[in-house]
Image (cartoon, rainbow, N blue to C red; front, side):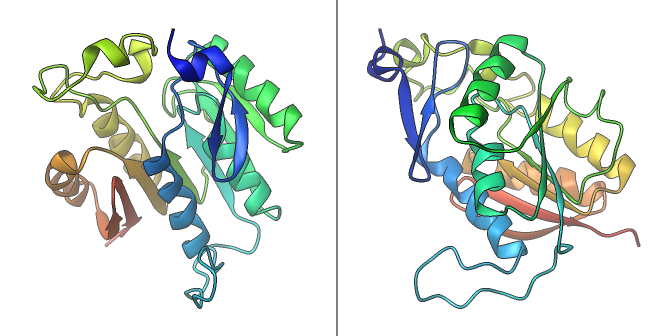
Length: 217
């Protein structure tokens, strides 16, 4: 068995999260989602670095779509205690792990069973998402290593972009102000172009992470 699943936990942003084969193993590149949100909130995420001006409301509503272990949502709740944090996933088994992690780390999270935004009945200020984006045809994939992680959390059709495009469509229809996504850098140009057609302007890229702002006009 994968060594992380064998020990039962993985560190993310300085905290240990329970992980089982029902959830994706948290990865270091995903931590930049946290940095990006903190930047929007006007909070420094690097020692000695002056934060940018706050652009989020003082008490932002943040939704983590496809939360898995809950590592993103829970970390945001702990780093931004003034925020209202929601976390959604299509997998009930994954949500059970996320709930255990929230309890263990004393984080206040509201959980929703939903495919993307389908069951979300409010409009958050920020949507963050590490959705399945792996294209099974990539010739550099180590499929043997990935085989122990849930395929539903890894792979997507349309060159790995199917779910990301669906989320962009839904977010645009609701005019959600900020959208922060994780994807392989080889997919970034395609995501930027697709988002532009849906009225999302790229704010920046950081490693695997892209951040967008909705422009109504």
